[in-house]
Length: 294
View (cartoon, rainbow, N blue to C red):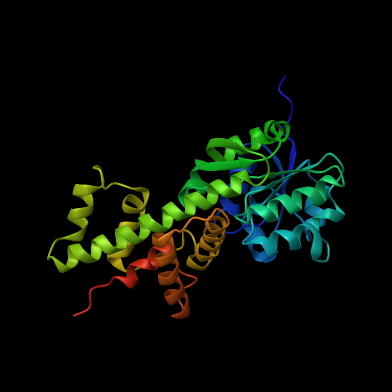
């Protein structure tokens, strides 16, 4: 007989974390969830998850602890720093699976602190947007010990359609930095191209339909061009978070003595949008940098 799925704690129920948690629950995992905004736990409670009041409580109930929060400081806080941090509940032999996007050096530092208590760690940032999180088709970029990856694989196979092991802790975050550079360029290119199409008097929707199956096709063109044309940006991935990710990518490039001029230009565009109050919008709000004005 197949063994029962391990008990999982899930900390962070944002645009990615909540659908990931729901998919785990529906796959039969025993799930305990925690979020700093308690109202976000209600749909998971209704679906059958247990709700923890603190990260420590979620960790104490778990063999595997999945974290999906906004940045380096948030991961460190929920694991070690805040009252009721997860470290107070994590048992020796537990495994932390960090799906947040943070600096590779932060992942290495967190892994070392956890190893002192015989707690495993994988950095496992994801890509694929809220669409992929809901469908369970995210691409999971993993860094860490192979034995830990095999322990985590049943969970990762629920949230992801593709799991790629890049090497030691931090390697998954390095791969995610590469991903975010590609996202930056592709979103900006779609926004710029649609502005050109409009200025040339073309029907932009018709242009998208004609081009998305050819050499110009991309995930951004397929999934975000309609929002850009409508100038309406339902949240898939927050602009301010993407700008945080570009800072990680640009720092990694600088450490490798590499210049990324396109990424730096997109980062500057994002800075301008954030200064204009657009930071909470989806990344596709980049289109507003290229809107045709008479």
